[in-house]
Length: 475
Image 1 (cartoon, rainbow, N blue to C red):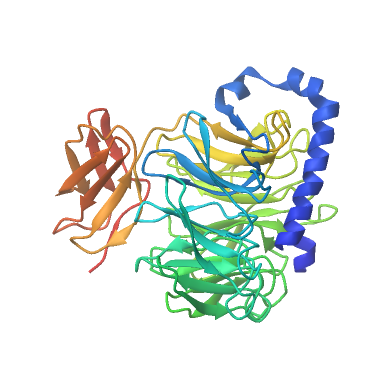
Image 2: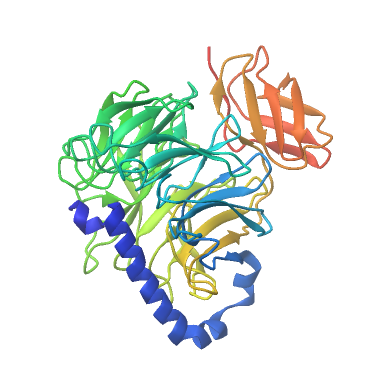
């Protein structure tokens, strides 16, 4: 499989989206009455179209959502805003949206990354183009919308056209990838919060090519990622990288178990890695996509083949019920994509068909808010066919989320959630901790002496909330 075939370059990405938007417009024009008749009451109870982009407030929302200390969700749109170069926005869980920043090319454009919340309370992201050398930027933005360009890529050895947001490591620095640059196949970089960038690895094609997705920090302290192309068969890879930049290939896709990873890999609660591929594995008149499980040692299992042509699954989130939730950009009853659930054992079910009217063509991995609700972005559809923000209610209860998931005794850990006012206790795997409630949606706790690896619990007036990830106590 070639990079061109799976169209993951930013230019091809844009053309793919524009093609889809054209199709979505036709769908909206010709099938509106069919959709209205087909929509069921049960669907309306679970799926909510929270916000319809108009263009001035952004169009074609893409990238990862980040939950802020205030409980709002922060994200980006590829285009729109006053200059048409994309925006950063925040939206409350109830659907009230505010544009925080409109890109101007000088500070970058096409922010297709979404955002990462840092331990300083600010958000970090990238733009694929623009900046000093028109090769993309890394930026920091405050919750109030003050943006700082941390780095301008040159297009040389340091990389070019970053797509995903960087993620924060245990050392406080941020780690990310560029689609191009280096030896021409993209790079992995580290950048300090003040903007000093170090290129850690340059892909050579043999070990993967053109990384398009965010890294994940695994429980063993290493980073894992996927490339849609390259590797021994040219079908993409899953790789491991140490914090110092030593890269090892965990798995080379060869078509037998899928090809062309189409989203980031995530680490499940069982320690294995889960992801999706755009193609390969079974003949479906053009190729079936797949959901896979991969052990840290490289043993792969296909959990599900999509029995339709090119549905383009776009990633997974493991919710607090232990199941995985994801979306496809295409397929479903009308062809606008679906929301699906898959169990760790591989039982697959479609939960919602996008209908164009309430969104179409979801483009990035959904996330679970600490209210228990799942939130996501549809790049097209909606009232103005410029994309929507949606929520999806599976009836899952509230929990707490940790901004950092490992550290030594004495480390201050930031906790996100809701209903924290009046909190009476915080514990690390049963060991009581000192804490400070900053707001109803944010508190800080100190890792106590004697704490062991396990969940963090917060006792609030409304009940005890448990973290969706264990906190790993480092020696």
